[in-house]
Image (cartoon, rainbow, N blue to C red; front, top):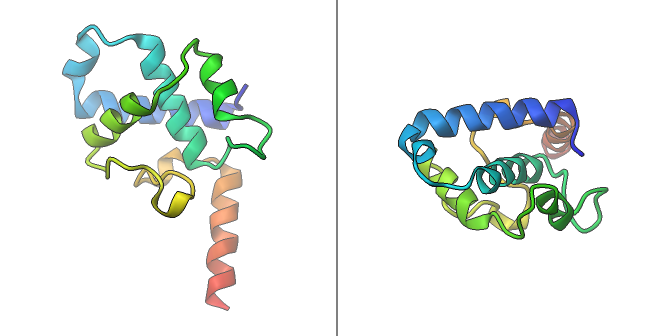
Length: 118
């Protein structure tokens, strides 16, 4: 569903969330909801899901067998010390580290930066 870069970013985010709050993953939290939240956060941050994208949020979450991962995403953002609300201004989710970005998103950000510098 998502490419290897997204999967690598998913693993990085999962690692950081687990390091930030290891107790959470020792509890009774549903693994598929956590996996869906991680994948959603990465896909959203990379602007890889949306109504006019090849993959919708509903399709992504359905692949994990869940309908919603927003509460778990907010929880994970809190563990990382990020603002509870993901996307200021309705754009891609800010995760606070370039480690979670795929090459296409990095290129897009560089282009935007250059456009505003001119």
